[in-house]
Image (cartoon, rainbow, N blue to C red; front, side):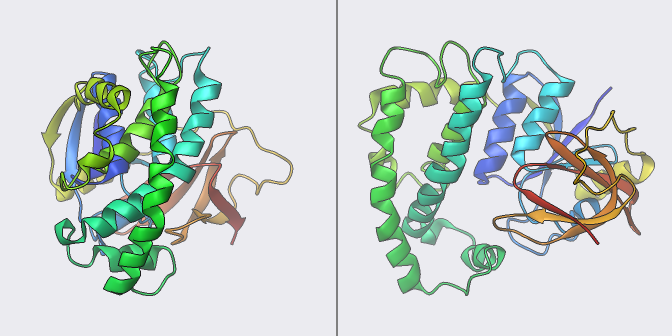
Length: 306
């Protein structure tokens, strides 16, 4: 039986995206709560230094980035689907907008306005992830003020997406687009109700958010990080599927470095064992867990031979 382990923390919006996907698919999973800021000593042996949250572990296979995590859940558990054939293309286009143009200003606005509700050191850690200096309170205040209008001009667009009476963002069925927009708006509620007045006037948004919230998170069971490491140690990575490589790609078996191309760019190194249109996988050795396979999406990540 496939045992899913999610490494996450409570107010991580991207973790909420995956938790809801697990609930939508009615899955049982084991919950490892990790620190929201570095260091993460019991996660690094699995990821090789990848900084973002969440991470999905299945035995000795470790999946990074929610884009790939949702695809892997879909591959393993195809029903109910988050990628219906007739809506998948538009849903993924909406997802790209939501995660590249909607979430960032929401994150900066909400984080600045709720600074007193956030863990100490969080903003310093996030600045390090983006290669920026530690922010002063004045810098945070200016970022909050700059981004509030960028949030407010986009909320009516989400309301308009639902204006024809459709139940879900892309149409007749729930898709990844719903999760992508929801986890951004969920940030208004994750730590404090202070900014709820920003979304209160939007009746369709609030009704739609209530439907998604009702999905729940599936069946979660707590698991210690030490136990998760033991599971990886006792397992072996799955055999790679048939690859699909381009002529310009590094050859399978090459030692490579992979890192995100926007932020959280800590490099992860290992032997390239799989490539296709949507995924990169590398094999790496760690003294605490032995051999693990770490999986990344192809898009959004920079892959280079060492």
